[in-house]
Amino acid sequence: SSLRVVYAFAREMHPKTSEVFIQYGTAGFRTKANLLEHVVYRMGLLAVIRSRVKNGRTIGIMITASHNLEPDNGVKLIDPDGEMLEQSWEEIATRLANVSDNDLESTTEQIIKEVNADMALKASVFIGMDTRNTSIIKCYIIGYYEKIVGAFKNIRQKLPVGGEYTTTLYVDGANGVGGKKLNIIKKSLGDELDLVLYNLGGNGGKLNLNCGADYVKVSQQPPVGVEHKPWQRVASLDGDGDRIVYYYLDDKNNMHLLDGDRIATLLASYITQLLSACGAQLRLGLVQTAYANGASTQYITQQLKVPVTCVKTGVKHLHHAAQEYDVGVYFEANGHGTVLYSANAKTIIAKIAEEGEVEQRKAAALLLQYIDMTNETVGDALSDLFLVETALCARGQGVRQWMEAYTDLPCRQLKVTVQDRNAISTTDAERVCTSPEGLQTRIEELVDGYSSGRAFVRPSGTEDVVRVYAEADTQQSADKLAAEVAQAVF
Ligand code: 16G
Ligand code: ZN
Image 1 (tube, rainbow, N blue to C red):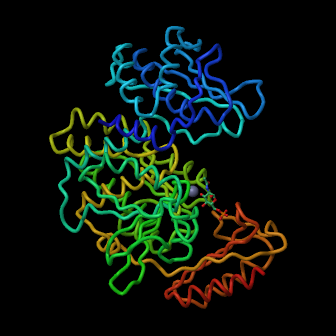
Image 2: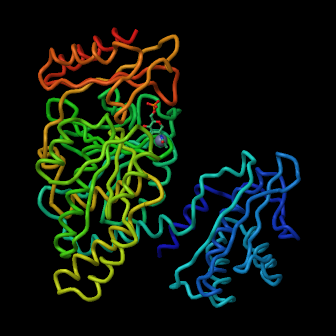
Image 3: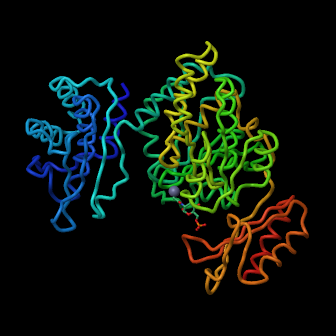
């Protein structure tokens, strides 16, 4: 049944749009790149089957048209010892590449039978590609969503829905790819999670325009295109599906944002709870950037007693620092993040799941499935969504209880256009400005005028602007402090 997701993906995301017959030749399939979308996806499917026939050994998928010109592309499979795909499979590959979307399921089932693949085995597939624009696909590795949804449903069967948690979740898809993926997964979620999806790109909705995680976080406004109901939790993704923030409106129509910091604290405290139920002595830590709300940092260190590392903006810095912990939770306030588990941590948890006392075994089994649901390679809005929903459900919490953990300090972000943004340099994870001379002193003077004030400036890495961040005890003060600092930069 989890294969259903795979077939739905094939149909919805990688449909066969051409009747041109295409053949697996000496170097696999090779033709105009725009005819290959469905073929590449289906070869992913076949590679998984092939790996299982080879007892789980690794199969390679190579996406390249070698010396052909740029508009061409190709895809071929590589057997475990690095040699070309076994010849008898070329016919199978051709058959799978050419069936209609409607016949894909039955043909795949037929092939699985013919080659006698044990679908319960773990498969391993490596993907390589050349530098063609059409090669740089976002790799929808087969089995990925299958695995996440499977783990989510398994966990849900163990956790009764209760307390303030409700299974209805509204989602702002930012008119991008994340919402579309959820629309496909939605059917296989059953009663476990009732998704109500908005901003799926229909009705002329434009990518990230007045919607999506970045809009919601920076403007502190609800997105357009979403129907709102008081206290209903809404997850807002960004257009390429790697960020997520939550929010809700209260009965006075005020928006309450649950951003990346809030998600990080929820995950960290839930995982801490599971670790202690396992009796595992593992070091959990949290990684943030200067943008993390001061109240979140205080809550994490003082209440949760979890160590925090602060690093420069950019996922690679967070990821790197998170690897220093047995369990490293990292999130940018903008909703980009995930959780990493060291090999040692996984071994210890797996051992407890086998050999621990009854209650410890249960907690460890749950944690293993939680890990299975996590995208440890890179922050992924959908994986994060399932992690959040599981943590909330396990604790019987609705948005209000989630919000009660701590109160955000009001904050404001601004951008300033300057002649040369690189005239500004920073240190101490971007919290201190080292040039131009005098700017840091000026910022500190300004900050001193506010209660709970904090501010920093940094040159953007993605736009030709300088970013200003300020927080203080009231929104009015945060706005004012940000404006004053912006003035000092300019
Ligand atoms: C990039 C980063 C993101 C960061 C943002 C900051 C990755 C994959 N993405 O989008 O993490 O928050 O830049 O942009 O690293 P800025 O430098 O313009 O403020
Ligand atoms: Zn993104």
